[in-house]
Length: 345
Image (cartoon, rainbow, N blue to C red):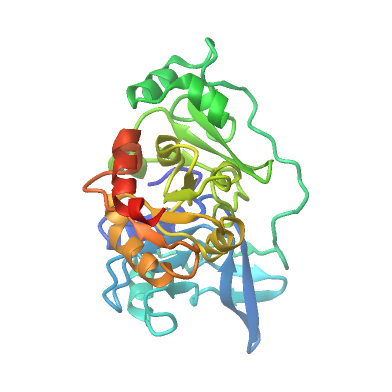
C-alpha cells in the first residue's frame, strides 16, 4: 500500500503488482481535469490534463522506456453532472501513439481492483487550477543554514557534499521541522521553484533516502503541493538564461551540483512546454543534456530529434556511467561537459 498522497492507490498498487514494482509517477498529487465527448447517453474521456499519471513499459509495443502513461482517473467510476464518464481511454503510449491496444492490460488491472461497486466520483464540469492565486512557502520554513534548522537536514545535505551557506544564499533552500502537507517521515528540505521572479511552487524532500520497499509503504522521497505544474517550468531558468551554456538535468540537487548553468526538468525528459522554453528563453545558449544514467536512451533519442533546432549552437549529450549528476563532484561534471563541447564554444 502506498501513502495517502497518491491519488489512486488501488490503481497504482495494481500496476505495481503487474509490472513487478517498475512504476514511475509524474505530476504527483495533481488532480487535473478530464476532457470528454458525448458517447450515446454517457461521456467518453478523451484526455486528462495537468494530472498525476503512472508510467510503465507498454506491454503491447514492447516499449522499455516507461512510455505508457496511465492517468490516475483511469478505470475510476466518474460522474460529470448526470452523466457517467468512461475513463477507459486514459491509457496513452507515447512510443506508438494511437496504435497500442491496452484491452488485456485493463482486464488485468480490473481483476486486481475489483472495485466495480465503488461510489462514483463527482467530477467538476471544468476543473482547472485557479489562476492568480498567491502561493507561499509552507509554514515553519527556516533557512537551511540557520543554527535552528533540523540537524538531520543539515547532516544529510552536508553528507552529500553540499555547502549549507551556498544552498541558502544561492538557491534559497529551507528546512521545515513539521511539514503540514506531509507530516510523516521526519523533517523536510524545502526547495522553492522560481519562475520569472515569482514562486511557481515548491518541492519538499525527505532528509534521508528511502528504499523501494519504504517508498511502497508510503515514504515519499519528494512531495509537491497540489497544482504544481512541473512540466511548465524549468528549475533555475531565471539564472541559467544568463549563461552561454545550459545543462539540462532531472532534479533540483542535480542543478545544485552543476551550478548556475543548470536547469531542472523534474522528470526523465523535457515536456513540450519545457522544449518551447528552451527555444524561446534560452535562445543564445549551447544545450547539454546530463540526465541520470538510467535515462540515457531517452536522452539520446531526444537529442537526436532536437540537436539542431532548439539551441542555435546545438544540443549535446553527456553520458554518466552510473547514478545522477548530484552524485558527482562539480569539477568532474564540468570536465565531462567541456570534453564534449569545448570545440563548439
